[in-house]
Image (cartoon, rainbow, N blue to C red; front, side, top):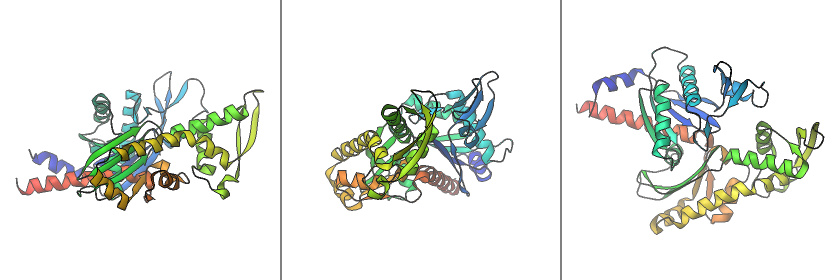
Length: 347
């Protein structure tokens, strides 16, 4: 039922769409677009429980804090691992976006991975509610990513999206505004960083932190054979596990490609399994339209070529893939507002 108070409230509040990701949190504000893109990390003083830093400032502390200060990532595999810290992080981002104005109570649309449990959805909603949200809507990330990529998701035709995030990879075939077939693999950018760190430890007895592994991934990481990148060298600084002393190692791109093969195999299998379960009529549409890749993992060199080779389908990396989910939440906000306007006109 239409509520005039809620409608009027929405005209004066800065409603928000949030991509609450394992690696990064992005925020869309009505009328402003994407206004925030920061790491999902919180630095906490264990003695007092006080939040010392959130986002970029907290990320700079990772691996560099004394014992009493923890740099915490409150989300793991796309879901909340620490309820209290997540609440504080959302509250911080609300305050930052609204320039610390008091009495701000925005409506929120939050993207969550496909297949999360009702308990996990409730945890997200409760965190947002305690952080000050007036009204919360949940949208599954594959649908949000497809909307943000401006795919014709409301048509009676097959649209396939692969969203490679920090903690999960979401694969879905969408038609008429709903997901016909979908998969969520708990592997993404974080698992790739771990694979790189494990390779260096096992092969060279070199221990590196997660920030260094991420830097290596984006500097010389690739998942498809590329002679130019494979020959590139990159200096990595870490600690020698044998001597315990600092050590510098020069490594080539082809080694990083080999290290990333494991996580990419899981993603490829998820895509193939989704295609195998897709109804024939929608499969025909996907053959024509191809696969759209979104998420931060789409920026990894050769992802489109590797998926195309393994599926035989055309693969396209969408423009600004990291913001697709949050742009989708923003477009969903606009749909909610239009529906309210239509209801108001008929009230």
